[in-house]
Length: 434
Ligand SMILES: [Zn+2]
Image (cartoon, rainbow, N blue to C red; front, side):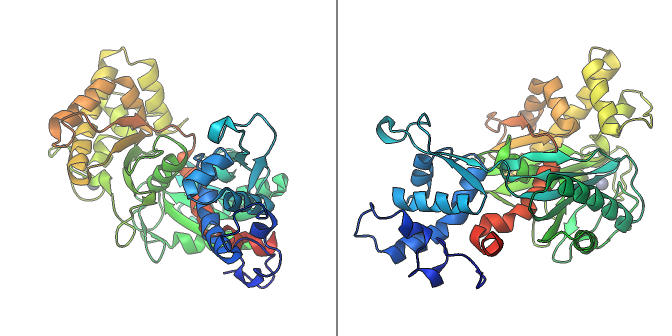
């Protein structure tokens, strides 16, 4: 992967006889470890090391050493290489968290002024662009727009344009771009199969259109696309309420409809062609509302913001998003019997859907986003009781149900898509141009 112009470094075996980073700091290490072995370990450790710092799991070099299972010298060389790439900061000042025997260890953090990913999100009530650095940190966001054209190229051109303006103002290096859409994204073609809440044609080649817009804006790097709830789950797993879960189930409303995602051992489970976890079309009310999928009583139409407003007898207005209107009603007027009854109705239906998912997927944690997070806040015991009563594995109450914690988690997840090649091979992706 390394280009010929790559500087000598931990991962660059072709320059092992020169003065790679590992050997620069290895003079005090055990002579029994050959430089070559150390380099190989260092190379394979660069990506995992970056992911550990990125996800906050290696706040010090001592923790990094332990997590990687390498020598202190190798961990030091790896950290130095990531710092040289402008990705992390190594703080050697005294006062860091103690390592073995209370010895101060160098503190590690993502480089706050480092490269960024351009993240974009389109939903039924608008779109938004942001710049996101390592650590899931939102560096800048453009104001959200509130109309979405029926032409995907127009919308994606506008959102990429907004991102490019942020980029120019920031002066940061951009490592690539990611887009979150409220639709299943079929692989390997990158088409939006069911943008049900947008006026886009089904099967729109969103990834190709997005990539064209990104290229036209003069932005280098990959341009990738995913379903918004999948990306929210990925972001929450790395930086939010899903941290350290092994089998993380995420269920969330967007501004319209309901989506789900599963993160297995740190990777999104997206099925054979990207379409797994289409939980919005689980039937939770057989006699319920007709659904745009052709069925009836799906979670998508029985437990989303519009369903809640309707159940509470409210007519949605055009001024703010449906999600915002539903959230405001739930927070401000929960004491009113009609609002409370509507919330209980939605909680029961959501709980029924979650119970079925618990039986099938056996998650070790469930996180809820959008309106579902608000319903959990409103009456956590009711939701947990429904899941426990209606599921085999949930009966013991052993599956924690938690609210999502990140702002703009789909945007952060879209950035994760763009960051992934860097996380997989920091030197190969950034070394040549660093
Ligand atoms: Zn449906």
